[in-house]
Length: 324
Image 1 (cartoon, rainbow, N blue to C red):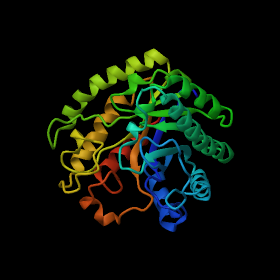
Image 2: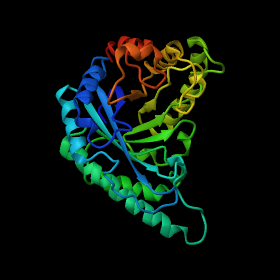
Image 3: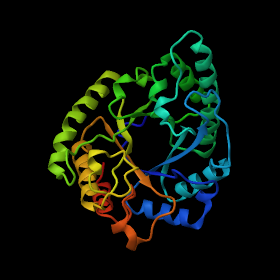
């Protein structure tokens, strides 16, 4: 891991259908992302396993972006001067959050864990080889897979295998509040987390109130850094521009909440002010920047995670313009 690495980044590519990365609107979106001052993207995409208890992870390109899509997106980002963290993710087609992927600890469970990690390892190795071939600057070996994290020996073997085909830095994306449960963070180069911490106690909370609630999070993560000696980055972090979402930054289901650019901007500013100067802190991949953006004139009514044309974009531009 390069000393002094600091990621000024955005997540890009999520929830995209096959072929979407190669559309003209995607390149336009990527250029607009670059204009925020971002220097990195996390190119995030997913496939499905059938249920949280399945042991096979298929490659079904009916809904998963193809290698050709990924190659195009990576090369377009590189042409714009952006660094790329490749982030393949496994979701569960039964609609249950991937954090619950796993198997009951009963007699015979080992064979299921063996089978799942074999399949997941094949899935990851495929994309790690692609990341190496394309010159990606970082590789993410998992995202919010809480139910698997206690399987330390499996993760050790998996990461060793990925390092045999990918020579760049590796991260793992834990979930907020669960970071201390990952005993194998010594095996990655960068500790990552989805930092969707609920830092507001009421809708419309002030930036100052949010900062006060970030301080104990900062202390906790500082101890995590001291434990493992690794830099920490927010591999996911964000908040929708909707009233009340700073109290549930992960939320994407309450679609009827009124728009609030102010609350989103306060969330962004509070995070940046709290963590920017910490020597152990390695930056942000904000969630997220869509492959197909809404028209600029629709920004004020949009209540999604995107910041394009919103007050939070101005916050990011101001901070990302600062030297690190």
